[in-house]
Length: 114
Length: 112
Image 1 (cartoon, rainbow over the protein chains, first blue to last red):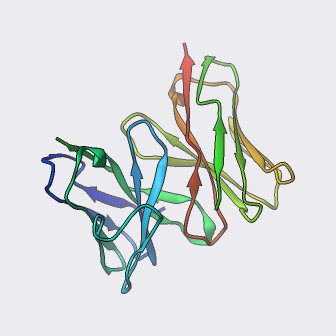
Image 2: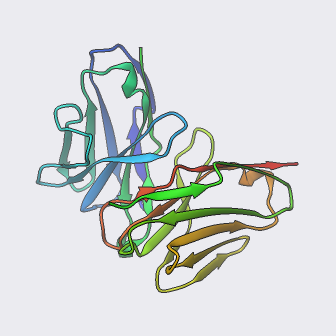
């Protein structure tokens, strides 16, 4: 399965600032996915990032708040903009294995907004 | 859209006993059902999955069963061990689709 490196692993940020999370995959993948896991909750898809096109956002998530870059087939970034305490969550990138197998997740970024 | 429910939300079992977690889904088009285990502070990891063309799949101490008619699937863990303690998430999707819809999770505690 793919190996995913995600950084930072954690950060504490002031409200009103932005944080960019990086995700690097050891193989080329068509789609990369960004998930949010609020404290004690399940995983919710934020957006799907395709190389060379705009990311596709799920209901409740907008590009101005969560801009995504996908400059090549192994790398993506998610920015959490104008942060508020409600953005405190774990953010995970993931890729889908070929043949319809489940996702592999990055190690996650634990974000705390104060 | 798809909705996945999961029960129970918490489960405590004695070491060596079996644990069963049940999920239901709403979209009859869903045909792929993975289970993820998330240990405290770690990433979710795929432990077993099942496609809609089979009713049961086993891998050592874990098994998953699927009832397409009733739209529910279950995770079975036998001979539980303390290292099985974690949060387990079920999910439903369409093979080749982009979005997995995850259940709310079950916190399993295996008591020594």
